[in-house]
Length: 274
Image (cartoon, rainbow, N blue to C red; front, side, top):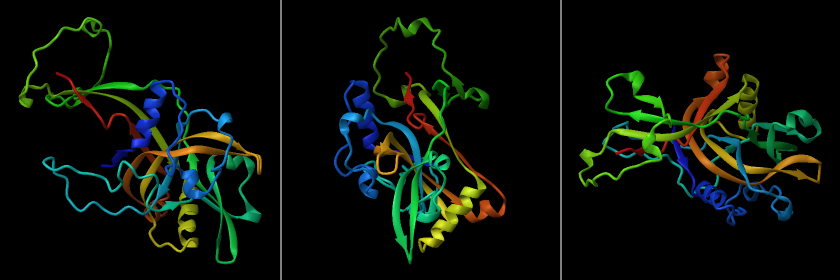
């Protein structure tokens, strides 16, 4: 089961949205500052960020405890963390053999760095696919004996929604209904076999030997024209969610596989109905 941790910066962004405020990240909380990309930009030309990128890493450590409903389980990342433990670039190319302009449109956070005698362009963010689907509101019934009925869509054709009646307050938690409700959006993450091979080669070039993806960052930000090379970059880039997993690059490559994960936004925080 993948552990998801929402950052306090995502809450800060969402609250600003709901109040119609212009959002300005706190100092030392953006990936732009971490990687030294467009830290000085024209703020009057920039709107508010949206969740539209993701990053990968291999710096997380395994959880030692086994699953037990009686225990609380936390991921390795804290809600105040602003970056992955160890970021891995999706693309790493010598500066005289950069990817095409069309290919660059899929990536953000372009960094120039030297390894050995070679200078590379490294791309640390990948653009998320767009979605026109409406978010789903789902009902979770933990008391249902029918597995198919445990999770169902919430339909708002109930007169009590706009005509609620007060209920007797209870202090005994055992009296609370075992039904929960959550708003959910599924965000697909896809990496081709060619990308997986490139990522493994990037780790080798950078001197690493851990060929896993065990941490993902879902990143908010806003596209911005980089006047230095007329490319599309991102500013106000902040980690919104951390997703921790255990994915072997070598196993996937050997099995001729691709990387496909769906990250659930919102559904990991259900609310109890009474």
